Amino acid sequence: MTLRIAEIFGPTIQGEGVLIGEPTVFIRAGGCDYRCSWCDSLHAVESRYRHDWAALSDAEVWARVRDLSGGQPLTVSISGGNPAIQDFGPVIALGRAQGYRFACETQGSIPRDWFGELSTLVLSPKPPSSGETVDWDAFASCVQAGRLARTVMKIVIFDETDLEWARDTHARHPELPLYLQPGNPVTDPDTPVAPQALADRLLWLVDSTVGRGWLTPHILPQLHVLIWGNRRGV
Ligand SMILES: C[S@@+](CC[C@H](N)C(=O)[O-])C[C@H]1O[C@@H](n2cnc3c(N)ncnc32)[C@H](O)[C@@H]1O
Ligand SMILES: Nc1nc2[nH]cc(C(=O)O)c2c(=O)[nH]1
Ligand code: SF4
Ligand SMILES: [Mg+2]
Image (cartoon, rainbow, N blue to C red):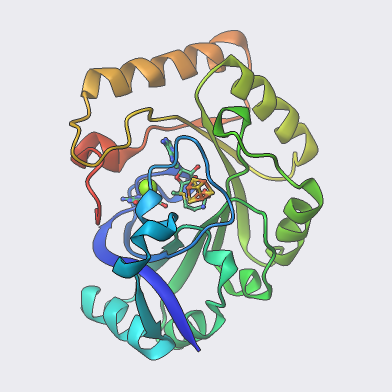
């Protein structure tokens, strides 16, 4: 079996959520069952980019990650697209045998047995601004499939409606540590990102949560966007 891979890059730092700042190599899977209105990774989602995706064997994927990391075991981040469309179990087994750890980012629409082989499972259910609707049974199955991993919830917030929704969503799964990040409305890779605009959105999010007495979530920026803007492969 081959995997559809949009890109493999790094080492870089994890820019989001619970592992922020940790050196990592990314495997970005091609293909997604969602079409979020503000997706920052459409090159791994839309079929018009399909010709840029590679069909690689598990061994080829693993060899690329190993080369990029210089053989130094680190946390490999599997993202996409939705990586849960495909079977990453064999790649994870190859890496774990050499001491690597794995984290996966998924929206939580498709449960997978291999979630149990991860160190960290990041479930990122999509708020109203995305235009998508969450299947909560599928989401709960993802939580269950990842029960052996450290599982966290990461929600992108664009507006007050998203924030209300995040509160309700946290109430559904209070067992999952909650990470919020401001949405980035400018996702074109060639448009420069204004650092002050990022800071303004982060300030709004802190004011609207911690500032109003909601002290549960961790509030973080997208660190890689601050450093590199919307460039791909970083
Ligand atoms: C590109 S997605 C790929 C993994 C998976 N499909 C998902 O959505 O969780 C990785 C992370 O980026 C977040 N993201 C996507 N577009 C964004 C944007 N415009 N601003 C902030 N975060 C964004 C997603 O919500 C998700 O947490
Ligand atoms: N540095 C860096 N950190 C990230 N965290 C989540 C990312 C993603 O697109 O899934 C991402 C990414 O693309 N780059
Ligand atoms: S689920 Fe993730 S990859 Fe898919 S469209 Fe939404 S943000 Fe993009
Ligand atoms: Mg990204």
